Structure formats: C-alpha cells, structure tokens
Image (cartoon, rainbow, N blue to C red; front, side, top):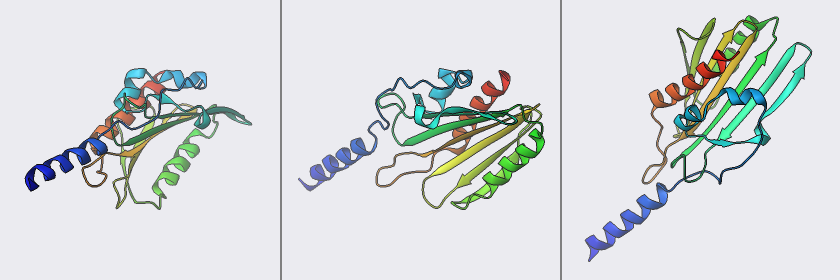
Length: 188
C-alpha cells in the first residue's frame, strides 16, 4: 500500500512540474524588424509567444533602436521558463564603441558569474556572454557588430525538475540564441 501511495505521489509531482508553461498565444504586433527572426528559430528557443509590451522601435539622434520580445506559448513551448529578447541598434556611427559597451554591460552582471567567449563567422565581431547563477536561472547573450549595427540576443530561463528547477542545457541555449542572431544579422 505504501509503495503504491509513493508511486502515485511521485507521478502527481512529476506531472505537475512538467506541465506546459507559458501563456495562451497572443497576437501582439511587433516592430517589422522582429520579423527577421523565423518561427523555427523561436521554436528552437522555446519562445513563440510575441510580447508587444517588451517590443518597440525608437528613433534616436543617431539611428534606430529596436527591441523584440517573446515568451513561452502554453501548450507549445514545453515546461520550465524561457524568454528571449533581441535588441538592434542600427545607424550607429560609433558601432564599435556601442558593441564594447553592450559586452561590458553583460559582463558586469551581478546576478551570477559571467563567462565570455568570442564567436567566429558572425558579423564583423561577435561574442557570447553566459551567466550561470547559484539557482537554476541561466542567461546567454550573443552580441554581434555588423557594419553600423549592433545586435544583442538574450535568451534566459530554467528547466523544470522533479523537486526543484534545473539548469537548462547551455549548448542548447547557445545554439538557439546564435540561430536568432544569425537570422537577424543576415537581414541587416
């Protein structure tokens, strides 16, 4: 009897933890540049739900800054939590300085220990900054400079575990973030 009760309790916990996360699909309109990221890349990042509140296009004295944001769609993107944000600054006379500033901001993250590595074959220069924390929360940022534009892709979240949240697979996060960065850079 006790074994059966233990199995049932374990099954209930497993099913509760691994239920789909996210919210119902929204029809939020994002800036046109956000359309440079394909549905396939968003699905790989497990963030197919457009977030209009986190997305905007701003005209600056020097160029344009576009923010694109997506979260998980319930019933589509699985369990755990994921969010992705893409920032594009274009028309920057000082793009190299802007690139260095964005990298420095990501390295100054005080929520965890940032690790930086250069990336080859992406724009004029590119780097990845991974921030792992003591909790399951993990964030990776891919920062790319191409000509007068700087692209930053942030992908963050955690996976569901049985008794606690689990760290996501870093290689999977990096591949998803890099895919989004490649698509955005290719269309600039």
